[in-house]
Length: 122
Image (cartoon, rainbow, N blue to C red; front, top):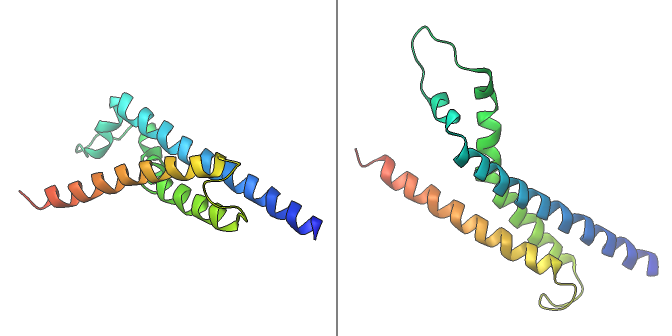
């Protein structure tokens, strides 16, 4: 019984750390994207001119920016469901990671919805 509780506690800790790393990476990539204007040229296809090599990472960065908060949110919900304690009890790290993930996901979902709405307004 004690080994099962220790295994559960260890898996909760590992998943909490993983969710936090995914959320932090998503935020860092978003800041990197905003601060580097060189990626704006990757969406333009100029005739007879090859794109720079760094444009190959745009799809990966895009995936992390848009789906990273969702992945972090799902992992943090799983962590909170695996806990035997109530959500507002100690340790507070899983709850903190959950709320950080919620905030990042809400911002991402809002931007996606506004983007979809404005795309068809030409």
